[in-house]
Amino acid sequence: MEKAIDRVKLTVVFYSMMNNYQRSRIKCWFITINILLSTNVLAQRAWTLQDCIDYAVAYNLPIKQQDIKAKIKVLDQEMAVRERLPSVSGYANGYTTFGSSQDVFGTIRRNDNLNSNMGINAELTLYQYNYFRNQAKKAASEAEQEHIEKEILKRNLTVQLMEDGSLSADLAGSGTAGLTGFGHAVFTATLG
Image (cartoon, rainbow, N blue to C red; front, side):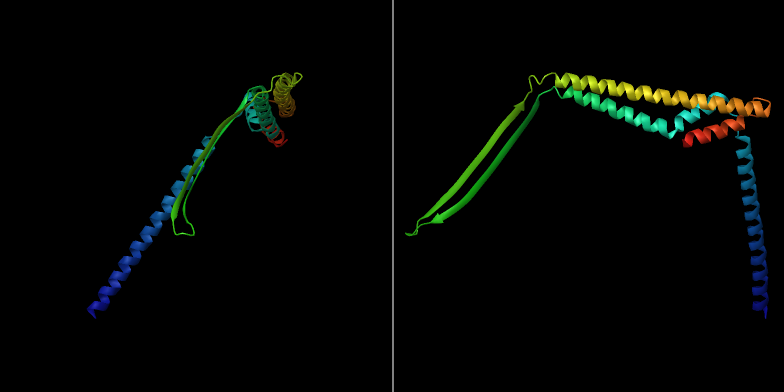
């Protein structure tokens, strides 16, 4: 009987401890969620026009694509300049054969051969009707063209953001309230 009473007491104590643990756990989660939500709200700030333009230029997909195209054209230009250089290649071959043979009289002879070949090839085009010079000029002009197109994309995006921002600022009546329109403009301009 005493053992049964001790078990009941132990069960009641364990149950009360478990409830306290669960309560403290729920309190910890509640406090953590409140802290995270309050810091998120405090971390927001108003965007200026320059912030919106910088963000749009940094994350705009057509501008990123144009930047990659410009880098490719610069590499093409470097390759066109290097085509004038001579090409040099080398090779080395080596092989051996070991063996023995027996003739009709029972004499055994060894056949050991060691052979190797080595060489260097060089090729240089002396003149090809200004082909290399013209290719280098063409690649340089294409690289410059891609860079200019990238700058035009940046300028057009900036103008679009300024126009959308001025419209939303005029509709809202104040500059800070109209910055929500900038966010919409940044979003639409970034998506292309």
